[in-house]
Length: 169
Image (cartoon, rainbow, N blue to C red):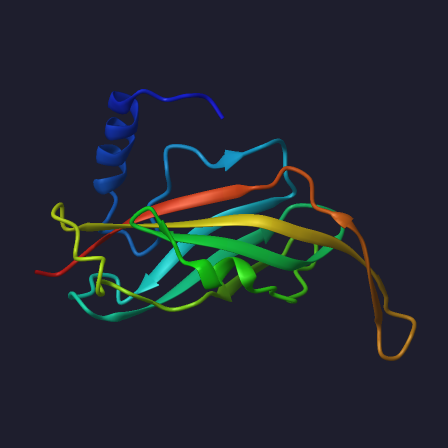
């Protein structure tokens, strides 16, 4: 990933803030990735969209499979205001994402503020979802039930998307 200056990161953040009124998540100026991937993080969604402090928030990620194979076995890493949610990377999501399909995956809930993590002074809570692992599947639909076989890891990971969630005062 190219090294961005503080001014470039700040400008990207300000440009993203202008879009906060939209119902979809505000993406970074770019998706972080190691190389080309058949997967894309289309959105990160938080409900409620403008939570007050000490509110349980629902977190979802919308993925698109642009490749020719079914993909499953997703592992995500979640950071709230730069702090990793440790339990997030210990979950394996066995959801089949067919070629060309878009799927919304519900991740772990989080609190808008909690002990040791007060509401940010800026009023914006950073939420980052990073897809760290996924596997391509071969699905034999001629057998009953269909037989799924992992054939390899999806190249080009990790992918990340970050949004800024305004906290109600």
